[in-house]
Image (tube, rainbow, N blue to C red; front, side, top):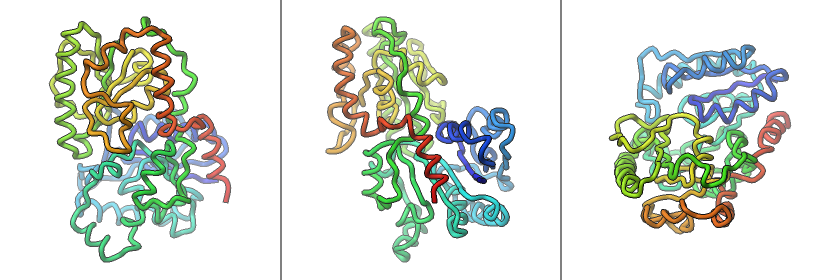
Length: 370
């Protein structure tokens, strides 16, 4: 079986890597790389070549030096559609399935071509559906026109050219269904990048390095400027609170969080080791981050801070209005701490399915079955 796949950044790649590890000797894989449009600290294509020498890597050329990855201009969109059309002229006949994470301009264009050719298309959720849930995703003028004129347009039917969309849990599935995602195409048995969260050794509270870890979100990258400013203010207040109460506090910097925020000397800034840092913290906080649920699964109590909770999300039981309300958690006994964690896991299971550990096997079955 020949598999075409794409993932522009590390988080997305973590959803595909377990499949590559399991099926590298059974399938032929080709990677569509977007390193010339989008990069993190290193090129993902180079990492894939090193980890899987057998995989064929094709880097899309960016002849006009387009730079707005998340909100491409009209000319950027036209360029990609024409470029992908010619690129896929042969590839669409050579590959059986296209798997990608997350969805974007390149992914949508490739999946449309593959689907029209009768090939299987599978999308894996890259992160929490914040845009859909909070209605933060803004459509451009020409997109709104297309949506009004053509009810069957893929802007109105997000899964029009996708056979299956794998999401992290039942909560995300419900959110997607409420935004015109076809229920029969949604699979909520979990996503592979969360597999390592389960069955990790949990440290005793007093043995953990950090009192608090704050998980940043890449709001500026996604054009959510108000949330970005709110987050910076929270970090400032957290610095003052930590100094006042002699707390050891870490800031887990999101890989796509622009380095334009004020840094405070009493805070530790962590870029890597996300999971190990969560395991080494007594309490994790965020403004809006799916990392809260990852923390809970790992065994660290977590809260959303200063949120305007709606009737659905974030869950009121997982929200805190101030840092002062959380101070006592840091000093709880192990048994008291475990009781809070047990309650929180009743909510995290809807966001990160308890069957996630079997997600790779189930995904491979989806790939192989007609």
